[in-house]
Length: 335
Ligand SMILES: [Zn+2]
Picture (cartoon, rainbow, N blue to C red):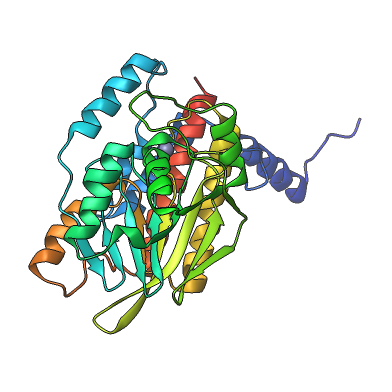
């Protein structure tokens, strides 16, 4: 009987196969694990550097149980009770007129104001948005358009009041209009009612007023129809391009499809940020863009402009969001 003598090539092929079994190659199926979670958290930490650490709470493990309506209302009440930051002219044509928890931004143009988000309710719309606009020298009767980033009450609750008073048009994505008409993700008696369906933003929709164009990108994830506006501002004779990330937290619970959309949206907007040279990233919550601290820096010195972080930092911020979303997806997957 002939003795089997393995050839070198057969040996190396066998070893290579054995290697494949213990260390998955790029074509192996992705398996969520404690290790994959840690890897995404590490990538998020690296991308955050020392300047974007305010985004890292996104990487925290979600609570074991979803909060009930009472708990949610308590949190909302506490947040609404916080004193609003002073309104401020942040760029030549962009003003912060938000509260401590939710932000509202006003884009001023010669033909009127585009308001980005409308806060929680009519009381905030009056005390924070209207009063804030007056304090920075703008006339609230010039509000022409309200873009609502997504269908949660902390962004639309003040809209019906402003619509009734100033006949402003309201823009939201079709999917989030439907959500406000059918089944809300969250409902709270502390929020104003949802505005009546008005303009539906499609992906890439452009709103132009007084020479300023705001492009609305659909960035689903935080809600099914979150919208992220992109537009130009100027400061000290320089043009900058701003993106407002329309919805940051993963407060929708264990929904792999939503996390998948979120990750895809963040990756897509990273490409758009690079292509368009977006060098300013703002949010609709001061906690997610460090707006209050940046405004206090801006009040002391306008150079270098604290909101102009540069395109690489905008891309890093989107990487943090994407990596934390991937860590969260994997956490739910192995629970
Ligand atoms: Zn929200």
